[in-house]
Length: 264
Image (cartoon, rainbow, N blue to C red):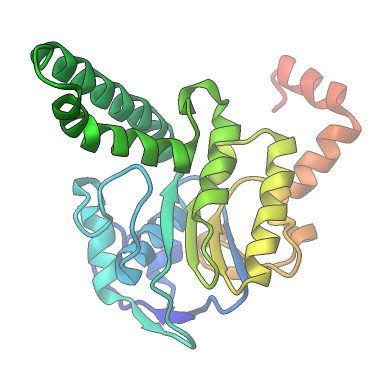
C-alpha cells in the first residue's frame, strides 16, 4: 500500500514531517512509525484509518469522531494505491482501549439491571413470559462473555488487551495501531509480537505507531522515522530510543546519577 499527500495550510499540514511527505510505501507486512511526540505519526495513522474506512475499537468511527477533524482534512488529500484491498481489520488507539474495557463492564451491568427489573415487574407473570423478556439481555451478556470472557474487569489491562486481539485478529486483515504498548508489560509485548507474527502468516498487515523498542524489533518490519522534519526509513540499530535503552540498561546508575545531578 502506498499513498501521497498534497500540501495544504494549517494543522496537520503544518507538521514538518507531514508537509514534506509526498509518497510512502506501506507494502511491508508490518510498518513501524516512530518519532517523538508531536512529529505526526499518530496523526497520519488516524488519517489512514479514516481513508481505509476501518472501524475503531472503543471509540467513535474515525470518519465521524469529533476529535479527528484535522485528520479528516489530511485523509481527503491521501491517495491510496492497493495491491489487495482488505475490508477486515480495525483501528485502535491505546487510550481508547481503556475506555472500551470500562464500557464492556458498564454494558454488562446495564443488561443485568434490566434483567432484575424484568423479574421484579413481571413477578406475577409466568416463567415463560419472564424468560422471553429476559432473552435479548441474556443474549447480549452471552455475546460479551463469548468475546471477552465472563468478567472482563477481572483481567489486567494487558490480559484484556491480548484477549481482544485473539478474538479480533482476522486473516487477511489490516490493523492500524497507535501505541499499543501502553497497555502491555514488556512480557506481554513479547506475547503481542508473537500474535502479530502469526497474523502476518495468515495474510494480515499492520501499521503501528510506537515508542516501544520491543515492537520496533518485529522481524521483517519496515521502520519509518518522523523525526528531523521528514519521514524516512531507518534501521532498528539507528533508532535513538533503541540506543538510549541499551545504554541505560548497561549502566542505569550512571543515567540516574546524571538525572539526579541535573545533567540530563
